Image (cartoon, rainbow, N blue to C red; front, side, top):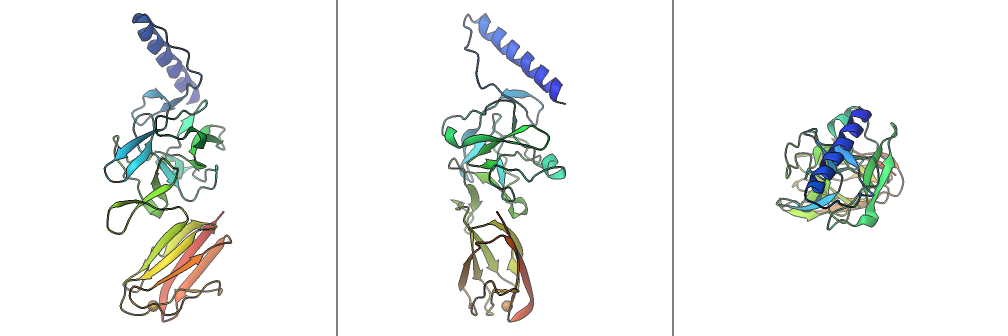
Length: 255
Ligand SMILES: [Cu+2]
């Protein structure tokens, strides 16, 4: 797998150099040349770029303009996406130092070594991925898949759609759960230590957010009422509504 890619990359570079030479100028040897097999199988010099997406505003893309995503189950500079996950969400791999285009803060660019020894590009500590269902530049079909995959702003933060359907940059430290139809939505949510979750009751019936282990407990929330809790310790927190025992949810807090 690896060798043919390197070989093809070398060929591409040679062809590129030959083409440039034909015009009478030889470009300086790039010191940060790196290659990646894109969805079309073509090979390109890697850069992480920024494009203006009509839905989400400025987002990160790879050298081919394909949307890049972060995975909220990853931890700082460490991928937790392997096997089937990595088949669906190909990690952005480099063979050298990654380079950033305009609007990229190069101090946020880095790499993390995967278990197979390859180097995955990181931005602001987030390992970067493309999504197998994206077919063309501008596609963002991976957005919010499983409530754990998100497009990324040039600041290196996840971007989520806001409740009015517009685009908004959501700080990675706050997440929302709505209560409607006698259910928590999403019922299962994974956050990082230090994140704050805000529940909002959209039902007329009063509900509570009550942790099984007593870690947190709200009063009755009437319609429009909110309750927020900041998770300072990792763990799995099950909770329920004290008024309606069938209403259950789980918060998983990872480092
Ligand atoms: Cu309830």
